[in-house]
Length: 601
Ligand SMILES: NC(=O)C1=CN([C@@H]2O[C@H](COP(=O)(O)OP(=O)(O)OC[C@H]3O[C@@H](n4cnc5c(N)ncnc54)[C@H](OP(=O)(O)O)[C@@H]3O)[C@@H](O)[C@H]2O)C=CC1
Ligand SMILES: O=C1O[C@H](COP(=O)(O)O)[C@@H](O)[C@H](O)[C@H]1O
Image (cartoon, rainbow, N blue to C red):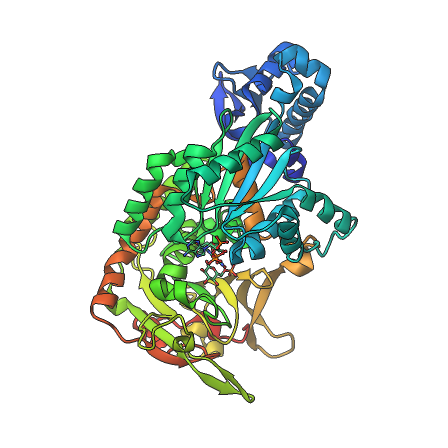
């Protein structure tokens, strides 16, 4: 039943993950094929059976396929309503106990499924900051299945009550929905439990298994393990979870947090070890940037608006900039960070994923495999990054307004002579027909002057511009720029040239601005909410496939090795500044000016 709740949770389910679906043509009529296999609905409740036995009469046009899928005729004008009919029929068929027993021959307990979500590393930072709050938000929105249990697992000794107390401190109500929030929190916390154990103990995981079974109460059990632990213990935990605590009759899935290795070799080794215990379709490699609203919107913007796609190539785009900045340092995470650095922490995953989505060709469908196939093609078409196309920096101490901000190496867990970059800028190129010669510039840094993530698309200037006189010789002045501000204060705006009202002929830059806070009253869900819901529903679109990961590492590994082997010294920049000037020289080499220096900042 996992995904039934999401029917109302995600009202646009055509393209979402409740069912995997794609269009096909039968005798010239377009059908939307809907495959229920990944929905978590037990086989005895197969919607195809429900339809075939009792609902067929009401839905004469629905075609039942041999593989258990159903196909719904698509009327281009009535997509939503034909889907709604099926959805409503399905809901009432499955929720009607009498009919269900008759049709599927299930006993009610067996017929219903449960989802147990185990947060491995529940005592840690990520679990507290993101995972429990995201699970609560899903519960609050009625997106979790009727029967679900959340288990915290870690070595720390805690009772259920102590876990609940710890979790309760991190839960927040949606700004736009506060009704009954306190009650909902209590209800949610009652579903949270804790088991203390070692990450490499099959015995401890067996104990967890017993407790899970107790809560599952004989229903079909689906189990999701979220590995919120340091990477050196991923494999131990996966081994124990899969050997001693995986579901006997439903699915078992594991969400793996980054880092997925630190170069091509270690990443391949990690994948190989994971695959000793799990199939690829059980592994959900999370990149939480893929769950961010505006990253999710990239494809919608491109592929559902005629005005953008024709411009989306070297013909019209001069350069693309993907910029990440944080106004705080690595405080508290220095030990982890020093082993990885900003290129592995942000660029090789979050920014590269954005780049791949930005640059990919139109996928055959919105199915996970079709989208990931296109992303892999982009990654494989990229040139490996050259050392001369990379600038690295590290923040140093800075005193401002009487406050002294620490240097990166002031962190006790960081060696005094560390060369680990906390800032990097790089120029990347995609050697395919669409993007030949277009510089994709990335910039990522910690302890900078602001916290922001954005994609900036700078277009070529207008040929033979009639208004040259008004702009002078500065091409950047006449450049249109599309800015997708991923965070904070989500927005999409297009900088255009406009006549200043009045009798004269003066031009200025103005923004056509889609400012989310002004346009939409609904609070934007956290990325982890979307991704957790997807993992529960078996939707892989926003998770990284192993060949994608290999391709991503292959672009970055050579330059990372060179930086380390040659012990390249980072350019030092003051905490709270705009970062090293080297980034400007790099951009200038490709005739680019960073867009985040402009007035809209
Ligand atoms: N924190 C963040 O913002 C982000 C984290 N990540 C990734 O998520 C994962 C979890 O991150 P985070 O919560 O910060 O990690 P933590 O360092 O807080 O570790 C999580 C838990 O793992 C256990 N643990 C920590 N170190 C060890 C060790 N050496 N051996 C055995 N157990 C250990 C601890 O639990 P106990 O002692 O109780 O067993 C700890 O509470 C990591 O892979 C991280 O890279 C990814 C993106 C952002
Ligand atoms: O993965 C990581 O992301 C965070 C930034 O995430 P955001 O959603 O807050 O933008 C970053 O601080 C951290 O270093 C990195 O590991």
